[in-house]
Image (tube, rainbow, N blue to C red; front, side, top):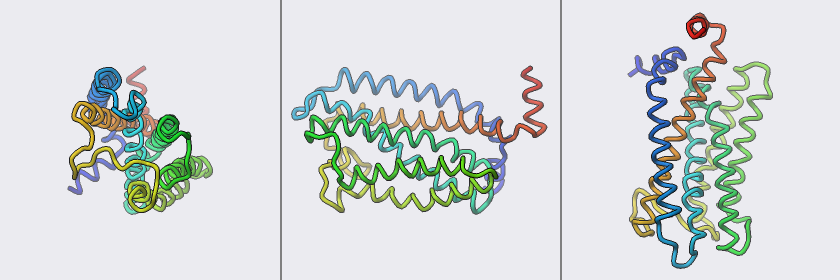
Length: 246
């Protein structure tokens, strides 16, 4: 186990091993996203109350799931970096942050568009929406901290601390609809209960969620590999890699 952790902590080992996994992740992500999009937007039946406006769910829910999951993954990576000083963990966290911020914005924007026909307004200061907005600010803060320090180690430590502290917002987002009165509906489906949606509406949503997560893995691998080359540019193995390419 420790041998595997040691290998994963090696930028060189991670770079070469992830090369074989990366195209598969992109291929599966593209297939799932294409299938889910066509099924959800074209073939799934309209909702009996919301009509076709409910189809925003096929973007809104996966984006919201991914926005929260990315921040948790960043917090775990930050903890690994702070405890074991594994550089690849910080590289992965840096690679994830922009995607998490974009997904949070997509979730907020798509929710606002959905709110107009559903609630009659694009924004309400209820617990779920406010906590998601705080998550966006946390992402922006983490990204800004990484650019605010001249020393890379100091930037990594500051970003890791903010991420580990800010992760407390994730359970607030998840349980806000249970803890407080909000206009936001409960979860469309969970792992512990039967979906409230018909199968022909729920299945494409599940495919879209899986597609978003595969996209996250593929993009994180791609960005982490680029981050490795940038940070390890002065090492012999990277210089040899570029010499071989030329």
